Length: 271
Ligand code: MG
Image (tube, rainbow, N blue to C red; front, top):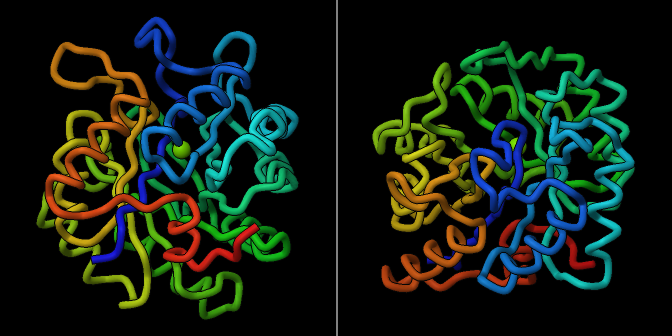
């Protein structure tokens, strides 16, 4: 089985420091945390940024600050979130693709989150895909619903995304796909054979979904964006979540990819 790619999503848009003091929010904190996670075995960094009040920010300059602080210090694959939870409009979601990064997330449809509609109309999805293609950025297709897989395949047919596609199955978020092994098996059956996939289990499902993905030949995302606990009642740090996934993968007989090996698996051209 190919080596396991571990993505760390250290910040996200929802948790606050009062929920978990290990949450990195400033560009310095995010960069330092990313380096520690790389040391533990992460190979992709999924980046969200916050403003001075810890609110989700759509300011391209803040994304650039995180990337600047990592420049020359890491081999991590940087993945910019193009999510719109920060209330971002199209232009700000596109502008952050100017930041030099190898990957970006791309949600290919709309879904109801617990307290809001996450709206990604077709023209926005296509514009983001086209901009990623123009910059040579590989999209990670964020899959909150089965239909989003087919929307991603249509982008490929339209020449707006190049195969092999890379998917992230987001499971366990209220309003989206439940975190069960049956759902995971079905989602995997829907993607083309040469595609790669990872799983983001939300909350307590992060651990079991990660283990399923290790065994099924997928890849894994961990981090406080999706889950702030190590186990019930015990807060986690991003490093600990990465370390646990590395340990589990090795125990289960699967080695963990370095960033360079992850680039090969994902078909990214090396920097
Ligand atoms: Mg995200």
